[in-house]
Amino acid sequence: MKYFSTGKNSASVSFKEALLQGLAPDRGLYLPESFPKADSAIFEKDSFQDMAFEMAKLLVDGEILDADLRKLTDDAFDFDVPVKKVHDNIYALELYHGPTAAFKDFGARFMARAMSYFLGEKKLTILVATSGDTGSAVAKGFYGLPNIDVIILYPSGKVSPLQEKQLTTLGKNITALEIDGTFDECQALVKEAFMDDEVKGWLDLSSANSINIGRLYPQSFYYCWAYHQVKSLGTPIFCTPSGNFGNITGGLIANKMGLPVKHFIAATNINDTVPEYLETGVYRARPSVTTYSNAMDVGDPSNFARMLAIYENRDEMAKYISGYSVTDADTAATIKEVKEKYDYLLDPHGAVGYTAVKRHIEKTGDKETPYVFLETAHPAKFSEVIHEILGINPEIPANLQEYLNKEKVSIPMKPVYEELKAYLKTRKNK
Ligand SMILES: *Cc1c(COP(=O)(O)O)cnc(C)c1O
Image (cartoon, helix red, strand yellow):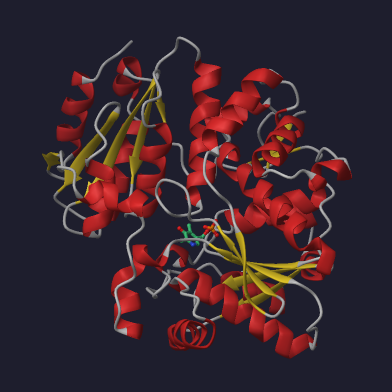
């Protein structure tokens, strides 16, 4: 299977090359030239791990030996993926039972293990700037892998205390650089390092960012799993709280591979570039606005290029996807209502998804279909927001609690490129 770039100006590559490159040379995103077809027996498997392996096998198309792939998927997905009934025909696909309590664990863990597999004896250094969540999933995803070092830059004092612990307490192959500056400065430093030929002589660098195909694929597996849980009630409508639209693109891929899906709902906060596009056919990228569901504060979603490549044009895309944009006021009202009426605690991102489901039911009158919204993070990750709305602090799950008792280790640094470069020189490994 070959991978093309959505930029349409780079040569096609293998899965391995797409994975290790991340972004194509023309700055496009990789997608398979055609999607493999999944036998419907795959969607009947009774364990998430079996389903993940079968789907991954089709997608890597022989580039990873079956026995190795089985080990890889079993190791990456060693946690529960429950589908819970919230009420009536509305279900939550809880994607927060992994080590950092957000759905990004799926992508980060699979990508890290796949990269490690292809590297063999070679060494790779992941250099990544984070404003919080992505960094912790990436760090934990690569933690303990023998041939990959991770260096994370984060803005000092600008990530939540829990996030900082997640970045700074791992040790082993994970190093945290605490930058006395902003997230944008961290990102600029990383960018400069990637363009520095001298640094390339010391280290093989990779970004492991969210556009990597290795992070996208596992996000298709759990749609199959949720389908299996609700299919006796009908073919589901999925609702995905979206920012960069990688999570929903996972669902679109599963559907292209043969997963029965009645319809997709793309739920955003007021950063509504894609819902607006679905409505008007005009794509207006713009600066993001801060909301309660801050992991979705994106004004120019990177995976939109992939969505366009999958569907050709707006009319085609709108047949499969409806978009809804949800305000903070409505997000708060939903969190309150769902807690009071159904005793289910949503996080702000899941609340955007649930609200969009309700809007879709109002608009279409379809009350029969099973609806599955993706609950993308544990509410305890957003305890400040939950406290503001409900006056309670969500219980911190054991996997997050673990970090709080560990000691922070970071290397303080000014937002000056020469300082980062001097540090990278000390890490030379080739
Ligand atoms: C990253 C993230 C999202 C958005 O996912 P995309 O793939 O960027 O659309 C939603 N919720 C949470 C909790 C996230 O961390």
